[in-house]
Image 1 (cartoon, helix red, strand yellow):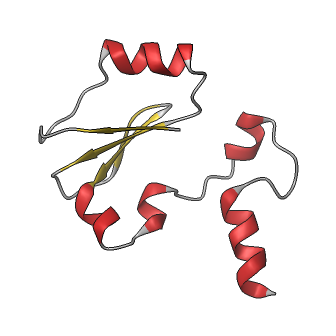
Image 2 (cartoon, helix red, strand yellow):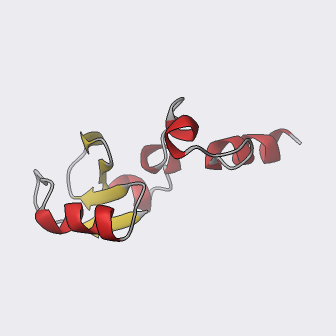
Image 3 (cartoon, helix red, strand yellow):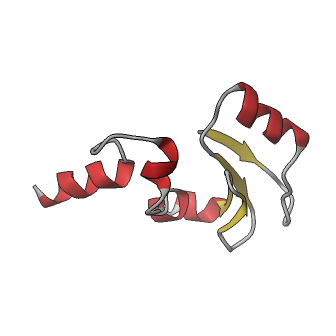
Length: 90
């Protein structure tokens, strides 16, 4: 996962993001910005308000996605939320 911080109110996918996704084989880039809405900027780029990180709202950073395990080809138990859910339920 890559993280980029922007001062812009309307971040865009940059050539450097595309290069980082490809060269570093990143699964996702999180773009932190001073806005208030979290949204997808592309299939592997998520824009997140920096305030939600400061408040500890991890669901904004790591939303549950049914297709995330299939997209990664991961085995059961490797998904962050799956592991966290199991830990919290005992």
